[in-house]
Each structure stands twice: as structure tokens, then as C-alpha cells.
Image (cartoon, rainbow, N blue to C red; front, top):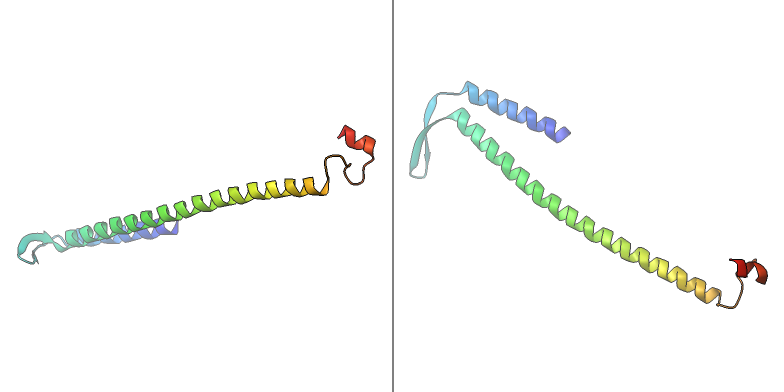
Length: 111
């Protein structure tokens, strides 16, 4: 939410600057030249920087989601291994013919 607020404020400042500076000025880039208002130039650079920042953030977000998916898969694997080990431990502690601890043979048959 804070990022959105900062974005709106920045865009508002850029738009006010663009509307305040409407005089055409010659702009040169290497050997290419054209007439453009400074406000439009600043607004264009701001929009390009905004898009670039959004792209960088999107790439980082995709990497983070990928790491989270791998971690969730690892957790599921570990949980299944834990269940398997608990079952194995129960089988070793309670052989098939012996009753569960704290029960009589008649109670264990009901279980």
C-alpha cells in the first residue's frame, strides 16, 4: 500500500512538472535531434523507469514464488517421511502379536 501511495505521489509530481514546462526545446541524442518539451521528456523518462522497475520487481517476485514452491514441495516430502518413520517406529515397538501398552489382550482385539 505504501508503494502505491509513493507511486501516485511521484506520478502526480511528474504530471504537474510536465504541464508546467510546455515550451519546446531542441533535444539531441548523438546525431538525432528533435523538438520536445522538457516536461514531456521528464514524464517519458519517469514512465520508462517505472516500467523498468516493475519488470525488475516482477522477475524477483517470480524467483521468490519459485523458491516458495520448492520449499513447499520439500516440506511435503519431509512430512511424508516423518509419517513413514512414525509408522515404522510403531511397528518396531509393537510387534503384530503383542497388545498395545496399557491394554489387556481382550481390549487390543477390539481396537
